[in-house]
Length: 273
Image (cartoon, rainbow, N blue to C red; front, side, top):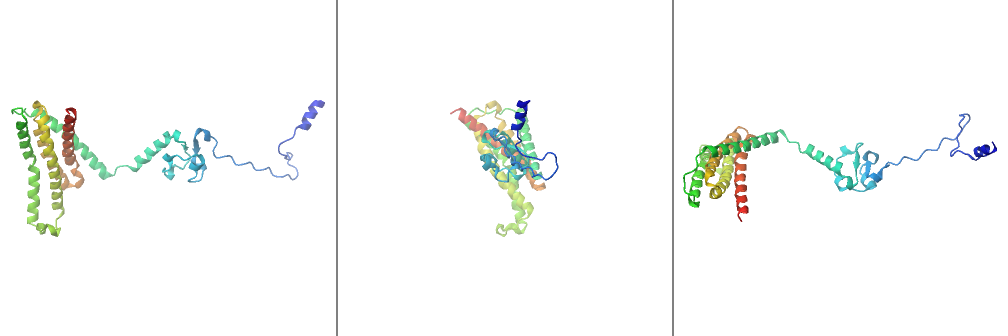
């Protein structure tokens, strides 16, 4: 009993407090504020617990998170340690995707370009299969002559466009080009003619080179490309006249065909170096 009483005597509370609630007693001391970072060692911190712009200095700056927008200052557990940057990279991609949403005009052009490329692949493939193999001697001169005839056919849209622009100028005040009196239709026709000339140049060089390397049983692909070139150029012109964004199918149908021919020729040259 004496031993138990001595233990009670030596026991004292850390803070004195009147637990009977009778009489005045001093208020309990305020506890220190809980630190904002409780798991810093793990490399994570809640950004909402810091003033704006001070989170990096408290935990260490990570360059991948310095440009995140303010909308991510909410209660997100963000890895500010550069070694734990997976979530940061994911959020940066999400922000970029939201800022790169296509407008309605961009969607129209993208759909038109995709349809033009698809139609080009289908048309060239079908025409190559349907058209007969050319009965010419298998030498470079004959192949080039075959390709040149196809290129003359591919010039038809360009000459029609030049004639249209010339007639419109002759019967309007734009007969003097320095007056800049061109109307909307004349301006579109001029733009179409300029672009067609550019496409014709690339097509001529590419198909002449293609005719010298393509296997003889597939040489008709040169004429298949020429036929599609004429169709796509007229589609480009008609779409431009209806609504400028509708030019995309014809533009992509010729531009990507030319690109494909150039890539094929370059691949052949690299392979046979």
